Length: 450
Image (cartoon, rainbow, N blue to C red; front, top):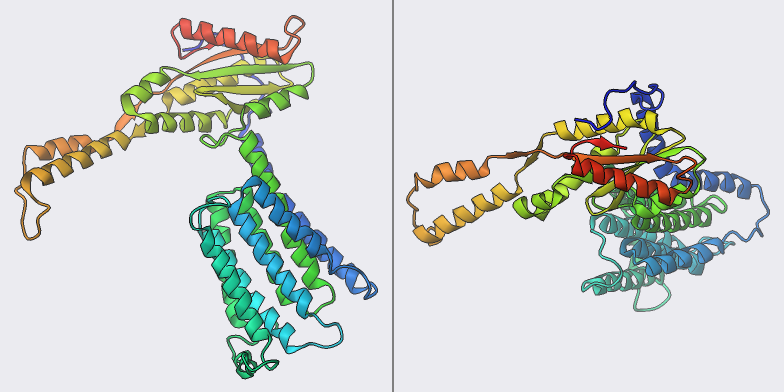
């Protein structure tokens, strides 16, 4: 049912599948634009540096960028980016301390082998673990790991210079698994594992930090593989640090401006978008009908499922509309540069799509079935070893019924308003759309009102 009646659909150019596909493709490209741009710039810079004079101060770039990544990760409490930045900075410190422009020393060769193995190992662990912030009760394990890696590389690199290290490491590094040619085979295997795992994480969750970890590890792989070329190692190590810095900034921006539950931009993003609009735009306020009843009857888990479903449908709105999580069970849809007459058909199709979407909830039934099973085991003593519990035939239909999925019907009410001479500010348009939403609720819900 709709509160505005039958109207002529707006031109297809606003809501065509091709336009929606192009929008999704553009958003995907934007997510990978920053690391890809950094890698391209680093590649161009490496060609320029190869033709430059040896006195070019390239080696100091990682000393500026990597501490910046460490600081920003601390500031925004991004634990995995912090560990990755620290790992790269330690690799740079080893490179700077052992590098000799006149000749290649064993210490430098040992250091390159060590970082080519240990840094991808660290990244693999970092990518595998969940984000826990900087300070948590297991942080000391990473500190011990880094200290152990430093001591190991220092011990190997000092082979032949003191009795403690001996000379055995010279032969060990010639082993086919550890020989740097140009990187050890073990290091290449760890790089492949880390990059594959990072790509899998990006596929599951295209969060900026996930993309940044994958891009930084790829940049460091290039640095290690072509370290013999002039400037390659510091340039691509700098690129890895820049990618991590950008990912931390993008992640922080996403957390501030995007709703975590629905994945939609938040109210702050809407307010910023409204500041840059032209003289014609339309705003719709969308509210989930009887949302409190969903929470009271089915629990907050089901309420979250409802919000995610509604958010997913809103993200597919046509007409060039942009959906936002306004707060609670309320959403907003902004239509830049189109009138209310053009927006109404898209809103009614959106309302119908939500009404016709069969949402299946199993959370409450599964929990109840699990509790029933536990109660029956407790009553029959099935927890004792060697006993076989009697089959409660009366309980079987209850278990079957409790595991049966329940289909939930979700509807929304929508109020819409457009900017005009009377409503000349965005605040007035939103307030008018809210009033229209109230009329839709009062008129029976599941309708669009203007």
